[in-house]
Picture (cartoon, rainbow, N blue to C red):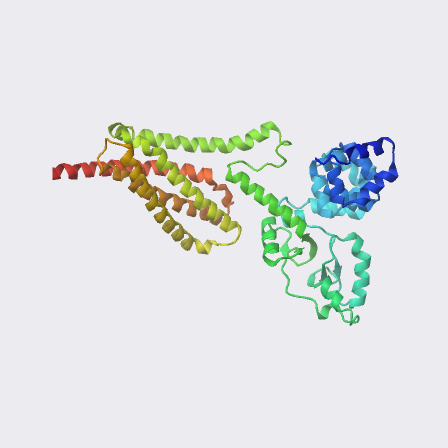
Amino acid sequence: MNTLFLPEIREMLETNDQLGLAEFCTALHPGRTAEYMEGLDAQESWSVLKSTDIEHRVQIFGFLDGERQVQIVESSDPQELSELIAKMPSDDRVDLLNKVDSQIVEAMLPLIPKEERRDILRLSQHPEGTAGSVMTTGVAALSESLTVEQAIQEIGRQAKDLETIYYIYIVDEEKHLRGLVSARELMTRLSRPETTLGTFMKRDLVTVEVTDDQEIVAEKVAAFDFLAIPVVDHEQHLLGIITHDDIIDVLIEEAEEDAYRAAAVEPLQDSYLQTALLQLTWNRGIWLFILFVAALLTAYALKTYKVEIDKVTWLVFFIPLIMSSGGNTGGQSATLVIRALSNNDIRLSDARQVILRELLTGLILGGALAMLGYLVGFFMLDGPASYELLVVPITLLVVVLFGAFCGAVLPLLFRRLGVDEALMSTPFVTVLIDIGGIIIYMFVATRMIEELSTVVGNAG
C-alpha cells in the first residue's frame, strides 16, 4: 500500500477541501491516483471520487481493485452511483454488477439511462467465459458509403462514447459486418477526402462469435496481434468488440486456472483472502480425496505383492526410487504437452510424433537413470547377487518409459474428449504412474529373480 498521500487526503476530506481533492484526482495518471487511495475505506474513496468530474471519476474507479469497487457500489447512494455506472465501459460495468448484491442492482438499474440499462441487461445474458461476456458494445461503426471527410466528422462525434477508435468497422443498414478501416489508414486518405470507405476497406476479417469460448478469442488475438477483435452473431451482425486489455485479463484468468489445476485445486472465484474458509477447504479437499483414493490403490498394489516382498526384502528399499523416477518423468511430459497444447505448438494431429518423441526421450533418460540405479544398488547392498540387482535398472528403464508415455498420452486423450487437459495435472499423472510403477517393479522383480535363480542354479 502506498501511503504517501494518505494524511493529506484525509485532511482534505475532514476540511471538505473540494478544490484540493479535485486537483489530486486530475494531477496524476488515474492508475497512480487509485494506488494512492488504497488506504482509504469505501466511503472515503467515494468522497474523493465525487470531487472530480465524471470522466476522471470513471477512469480512477476503473483502476481500483474489484473488491473496493463492489464495496463502493454497495455502500453508496444508488442515485449517485448510477451516473458512474452509465459512463463505464459496457463490459466492465456488467462484470462489476455481477459481483454486487442483486437487491442493490435491482434498485440501481431503474436509475440508469434507458439505453445503457438495455445494454447491461443484454450483456448479462451471455454465459460467463464466452466472448459475449467480455465484449464491449461501444464500437466505431460506419457505413461504407461515407467519404473520408464524413467518416472523420462522424468519428469525432462518437469518440467520447467509444473505448477505442483504432479500428473502424464498416456495417450495412442492418448492422452486418462488411469490412474494416484502421484509423491510421483513414488519416492517410485525407489528401483525397471525397474517397468513400467502401473503396479501400478490408473485407477479409477475422471475427469471433458471441458464443465462442474466451480462450479461443485470446488465441486469435494473440495469433494476429490485434488491438481489438469484432464479435458477431451467426448472421454476421456486429455486436461489439473485445479489446486487448480484456484479452490480457482473459489470459491472466486462464493462466491462474491452469496453475490451480496443476496443483490439483479447484480454481477460486474470488481472491484467496476473500474466499470463505469452507469453500477454500472444499476446493482443495475434493481433489485431495480423489488423490487419496488413487493413492490407496498404490497401497493395495503393494499389499498384493506382500509374499514376494517378504521373500526379497531388499526390494522395498528401491520402491521410492522407482515411484519417484516414473512420476517425475510423467509429470515433466504432461507439463510439456499441456503447455504445447495451450500454446497451439502441437495439435491432435501431431499425437503420433509427440508420443514418439516422449518415448525416445524416456528411453535416453531411463537408460541413464538405470545405470545410476544399478551403481547405487551395488554399493548400497551387500546381500543380493549382482545379477539380482539387474531388477532395479531394468525396472527403472521400463517405468520411465511408462511415465513418459502416460504423460504424453493422457493430456492428448483429454483434449480429444473435449475436457480441459489441465485437469490431467502433475499430481494425477504421478499417482497413476505410481500404481503402474509398483506393478511393473514387482512383476519384473519376481519374474527375473525366479528366472535368474533357476539359470544360475542350473549352471552351478
